[in-house]
Image (cartoon, one colour):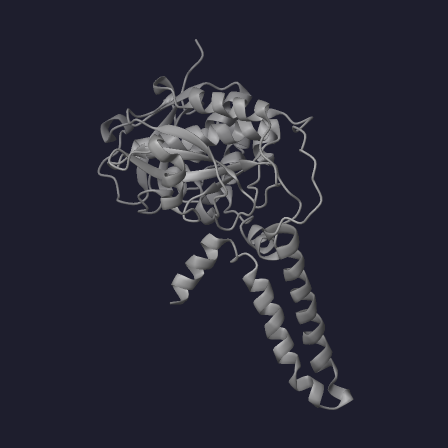
Length: 366
């Protein structure tokens, strides 16, 4: 029953405001006994009373300004200025609260071009038919508020792991293009109601052929956001260390010395992947580096998933692929992705986890 209530509140857009109001009301209830005892113990009354009153005031403010949108008009953010490509990628943050306005025609057209460009067959790793669709609707998602424009990642109905990696990689390239324009984005997986997404897509979605993998909200960042969302953002800013994500051996025992040659040339790329988004920021991707015969150059980077997740882990891996590729392009380093067999990687029987998926292969300058 509680789960059904939670889902109902989540997809009616009220769950973001309930915790603050409940906490405030609870503190007021706790303060009641303190009002009946001596003034010597007045602190037992006033502390929870004041905190409870403050939280209820915050909840009322959040509902008024965010849920009901009774707030002043905000300016369209300008495009980032003075950042190189690497700093731009690193500066990208998930947006949890959007302004009450649509994208400009110019920004929407640029996103459409990026969606077409990055899903061309010659840009993909696999052969699965993937695509990105755009729609505008007051879709309620968790925990983001105010979102009204979305890019939908669609893969074949029949499970295709490489297609999942491909569409996530393509969508994150669109996300990075949006960041360059000053457009905010937020990846949304379980927080989106797939039935609603399919309904809004209309005849662009065939349930016998297509599968909605995830959605990405796009729009302009708002400075107004519920207290609950602010707390979620603070918790999700934590990341694992680079040494927990990149390894120098196939057994994932030896941390990769990223500050030593030849890996130091890619140090910024390692950092960018460390801060790449993933579901609940669970960071399920792991990488092993392989040098060439001389040991003086990186030959390839093997991407693995650390969990058995059929969808969200390969999505996170696809985001890493896009991030790594963008970082290398910013550094002028060329390479390409390919799924290699065990014999091509020179490894024996692989463990079930971490699971190998794809490799980035460096292109040696001629």
